[in-house]
Length: 236
Length: 279
Image (tube, rainbow over all chains, first blue to last red):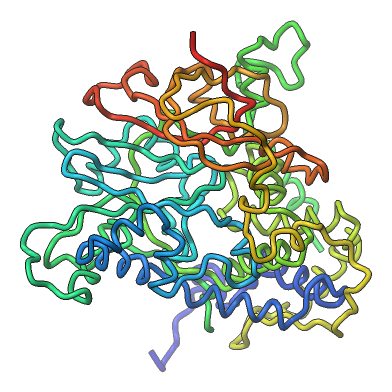
């Protein structure tokens, strides 16, 4: 397209290529600058929390479940003292402030599934989620749609994730609407005899820990994989 | 600079934004507004559980830089004693009202709550905030053009005079709700007790979902002590902690149209003030 020699008006047919800064971006930068200038927080504090937030993810939670599957003593610890069990997979719920990540509080519970009981979590009021051990929640978990429907039509919603449970399994919805944070400890699936902790960790996906999927040998990805890209992502 | 036509066009856009019952005129006379609609208007907008909705495609989303930075600034403000988490949850999830609640991206509301709390607590003046926004807008007038988004504070201020809450001192090394342990006396209910969720009038804020109010459930756990959300959200200094309970409901009893197995259940957390013993 080097010889560009026709007479249509590009201004009308092609969007101008200005990489616009959005209202949200402007507001965030303005607020952060003013907070630092007023000493409301320091740049160092902001950086420290940013670094903390960048390293959280679902791996410790997956490892916790895998270890519980292999060690009955650890399984008991996970259910009775979940924050002590968290420490053994590297998550201290009091970090990084000395009183935890403020939005997540420090009242963690692990909901143990059985062959006749299946848990699934939601926060119908906002998006309460055990961030320190699971990382940030997926976008769909925060949608009004999931929050509206899961508390009322849980089996229909689960079926949209490809999860069909029989009538002999009690579905128990946990609406985490106050200070408790929950994650699900699914039942160890068949076909994993002799597996190592690392192998088991791989099949405990984030979706299994929310309760919208069951761990399955050979499945190491979440059910929902479609991902909307960011215009100005982190790290650019 | 906008043209008169652009201003008119934006006003026309705003006028199409509907957030009230279409069967009533705007600002209806009192006789036109019944109790059910009063309750609907007063319902904290975050409380969406059980509202009818059709299936949609669920997606993941990569973070915009500003979204990540917004999460961080909110947490740092709580860490440094500017607000309690419960203040943030009200300001960003409820005070924004229905149009913004449903119309904004998730972290857009978080960001708005930062501006709101700083202005309301007299930590940042609204004029200096909007002036700074104009300055940042000007800085990026030509778009990003290959550069990155960057906060450029002109200096680091002395924060010794900034008013901070005492929560960050008391909760240090303990956590929240542990910081309130031992302050609510004897719990009124025990595991296995049948309870009814009271139907208290709701103004401004609660975290007791509408969908369980009036329903009968069973205490599944005596959870922890904490001020109730209705008090904590205003950072009331002497708010008395009370017991919270995990209450279990049977889905078939909770929902009129539930057609799943009789054994299915739902659990949610409710503070003591909202519960009474079932007859």
